[in-house]
Length: 352
Image 1 (cartoon, rainbow, N blue to C red):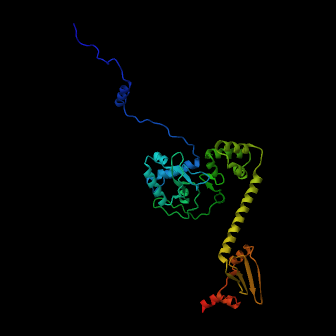
Image 2: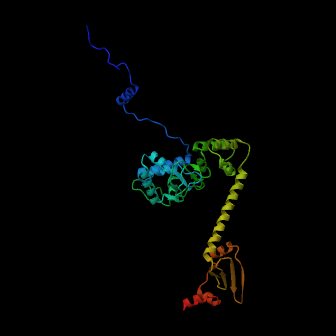
């Protein structure tokens, strides 16, 4: 006769929580992976993000913060204010919010960002770090704008040829069109609209098959392309490239119009500089037989010569600039002004 108890009270009852806890402790501690919120970025912003990640001279964590700021920059307005939440930046770079503030202070010290006046506007209980914007220096470093620095001379290398030659370049080299990243300069901006280089080259091939140039098409319809992105832009340009319309003459007229507008702007700038430089001054001709007295606002000029003087409006500045460049006009000295009796009393006292 056996007196042993076969079952213990509660032994036949299972406990799910303890079973799950035991399974978690005995299994390997693998992290739970979850994707981040996806955000489609334009190619131009992606290139700026990659360039910021690989800048030399900055710590890796500071480069990461700068790259995160580039994600919020509008591609058509690189200098627009950036609204970036500090907790988002801190989470993406794997740091705390105080570290983000230190990185921003470093970027501001290096003149890579500009801090605008703080706006304490809460958006769903969250505050942005500040209203920031990239400086011109930062935009040039990450490639958001074109740099105007041209390499004049490359120093010779001790192991490589300096590539300098005394031979005359051929005509084809002199007439080669300007390229930006292996693309014609007038087509490179399309990459910022979501077109890849391969897509642009394909469009160039389609236009060539139909006896056209993609540059002519883009020049004529450039104003309509600003609102198109990616696939819609490609389809629109492809339809124009394969269509019956010839864009050669309209493109030539548009380029001439752009050249005229640029020349008018240069004339306007030269006139502004002339008025700023020669306002309140006195000029004389090469023979020193006339004086040209310009008023303080550079709006009127008085012509003085032996026996009489006349005053007229100073409307066109280009003839005056041409005479100054040729040497026909020059600044009048105090002796020349005294010969015409036009020397001011203060100038006479300073000479004495």
